Image 1 (cartoon, rainbow, N blue to C red):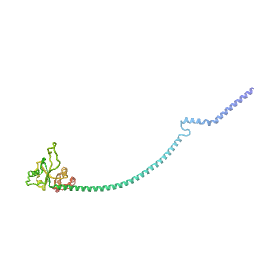
Image 2: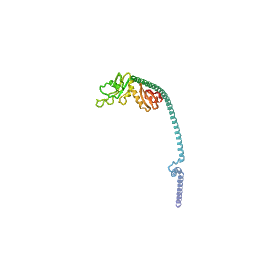
Image 3: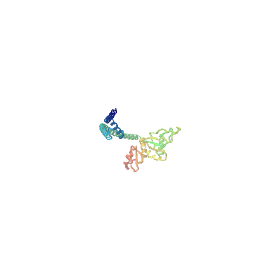
Image 4: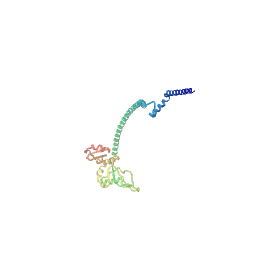
Length: 293
């Protein structure tokens, strides 16, 4: 009985050993499949942080560099194509613009030619107008060759200008022979004082028409200091020209004679004027012996 009990115990122990050996061998055989990944992941996580356990850092950088290089190369190709397209488009536009400019330049040349011709025509017409204006002024002045103007005579209502002029010729100029006057009258607009009864202090001039005025003009110097003056009956244009000539810096003296305006410069040179432009154009060219009175 004791012997059988010992045999049972021995078999039991052997069975237990065999069982443990079997379990141990089974566990050692299955462990590479079940436990190694867990152990590797933990170890890799512990040693390298959160990096991909299957791709190292160097490989990842190389992959990224290659991807970036490919993308940059493709972008460069695309940019070159886009730039070439833009350049072709610009060339087309520039060519079209140049053609338009050539057309505009041609039209502009034609326009400038027309303007030049028109300017020449206008200059010619201006010269003709000045010539006609001068001739008209000369004709008007010629029509006044026998007229004189008397200034400084007090103006009265109901006055007789013919009698006034005859008294001046006889008593002021000492011309004793009878002078027949064709007409005599005041010229200009009547200007009355504030009470509309008295004539303004500065009287209007008297224009006298007669056939011969040479004797009157030769004796008019006797009216000096009398407040009365006698002058030629000049056209409005000649009056303006004489006024401008007297005020010009180049004029030493200016006068009216025989229907013309004359100027004498500071160097003694003198010339005849038809417009104020002649002062700067003609006077410097004039010589001393050109003076005429």
